[in-house]
Length: 257
Image (cartoon, rainbow, N blue to C red; front, side, top):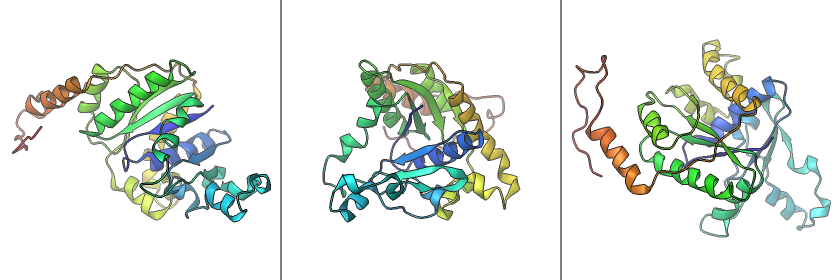
């Protein structure tokens, strides 16, 4: 099974991917994680260091690809997960925008979208549109959406109501998820010294279990841009008061849209 994880830059794709990889390995699966970001840090929390990229290795072999062996580019990460970093062109050069964004959709079985809140919806919506387009000619399906480090899921629920798709999980808003990235460790490795984090690992194990169930997946139908702007405007300007929030003050002083 081949899965691609997409989302806006800095949203937590790598951290989420590494923890899902470990979760799948904990379920007895052999996992290969391939980082497709030119800055080659997608597998950092699995290996604890920036591993050489395929491009680095090719360069060291004077681009004689026939001299490159699997052990030259595959590094063993935490939990037995195999790690590869593709590498890519420097910022502002090459065709990385296509090769590292659209091309994987041609060969994968499922796509997972990572999002947080607010304007990240626009990136998620564009990814949904890309999946729909590629699904016309490839056996690609959207497995679902993962909300990363989110205290509330109101906006996520509002979006998936407009653009129906499964919500695989909503990860809690805790600092340890972000700190794990800096430490170069997955949550599963951190829990060995911090048992209190075990409940966080259960979120990733739940995502893994849903993937292993081989879901039917969907072909999403993205929300038109104007409707998405209206959705955001309505969400913030006309909030729905719940029983527990009726007496809370409105913390928004200005709204610029």
